[in-house]
Amino acid sequence: MTPELPRLGLIFLLLSLSGCYEFQPEVPAGPSELPVANYASIRIEYRQPNGCANALGNCADRVVFFGSWMRPGEEILLEPAAGFLWLGRASNVPVNWPPHVPPHLVRVFDPHLVDTDSGGVTASALKVGEQILTALNDVGTPSESGQVYVDDNGLGHNPF
Image 1 (cartoon, rainbow, N blue to C red):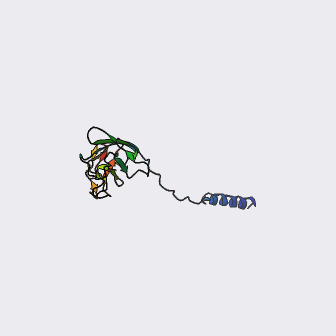
Image 2 (image 1 turned 135 degrees about the horizontal axis):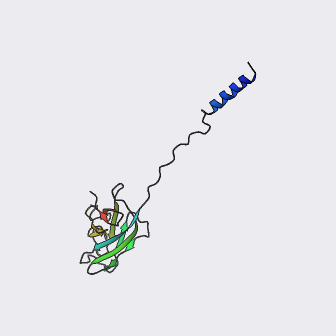
Image 3 (image 1 turned 90 degrees about the horizontal axis):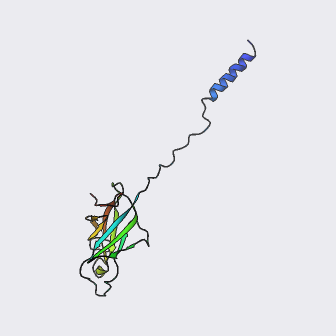
């Protein structure tokens, strides 16, 4: 046997074994991708009670709209319309329809209702994205709010 043959066999063996060994460790899976957030613009409509229930006379103040997606300072002052109707538009509302997350909570501060048990906070007589809200929490209290889902077209949906 020639001295070259064992050397070639050894080289062949080393090359074949090196092909099976993985030199890089397996990378752990990273976090899942964040869902692409969609935003919509919604129309807000609030029908104010005809009579002012306040003794102090601040009934000429404007109605203010609040949504759970808003940060402090992003509240919307509604504009008076015919009769006791107040209108506004909220932009950059996160789309949450079809329901896969909790509904948005919405309410208004109505100066006509300051001297009532709610302290002026209400979600009654409120339309969000053309939807009359029917799912209300804590009615008649300062924590009252309405639940609403918003779709890509800016239309509101009551929870099931």
